Length: 373
Image (cartoon, rainbow, N blue to C red):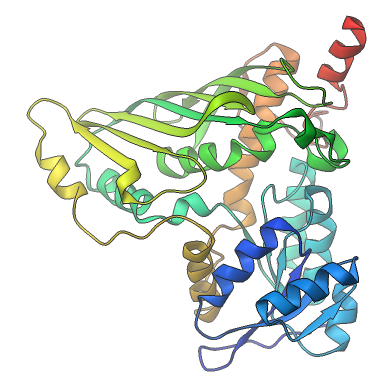
């Protein structure tokens, strides 16, 4: 049952926004900036919320479900902006209608769900894209090109820190901090953007050793994790994910043979957030870095890429398979910290308890709390 047509650049791309809470505004704003896009439907279980959103962004119609929205007219793309636990069923529903879908992070709650999405996508006329917008700033794209040219030399040592601050009331929202609703704590919900960018730049990881814990907040999940990651290239990086750090920063430091490249920002970056320090005798790298236009990271940059790929009928800007490697690192950080072992890429398969839930169904930090009590 197909409810979208193969569209070309000449016809508007009709988009439904599912879930009209906070992040949906970032999607609407980004979509409004793209030529040839029509915000066709706002979908929310709360009609007052979808109507307010529709009024704010000039959306043609509102509905309580995707099926109801489709009764009002054809759609091409669904932007899934709901809390994490509904990303997976809504993506499956969009694919069942033959629609393309864009899924906010995390795209699913488990590696098992990611594999099911891959299978469903293969059987559908629609395709899936996952929001990892840090890949799309000009800084990341320039760095990829410089890496590939050989100008930077080999990748050696990296630091990837997401040090954010969320107070207790943030966790007191009913759906937050629960394994079966959010899938995890800052490793899944916050730091995933930064280490997705690290993996995008440095390629496949091979093994990880990690610690995680609940140090300061009342919540079921971890509030901090720290990992050491070895890449297939031999490079080594540390990855820290925290929501208990008073001075907030998102920091990436990549040491190559010929330069150190640093990115420090909070929720998004422009070229001025990057800093390149050449190794002795390698000053030419800085000149290469300073070439090209400045395009900030963010939803508009990723949506431009998504819409280009749909119009060209090319693979999605960040496919489910692309996102699997990032989700697999998150799962391995949890598996390593809970099991006290080093975890290799590919090790978490159907036979592993960490395949179907990030905590391996062990609720480790919830138990810790019970022991302390």
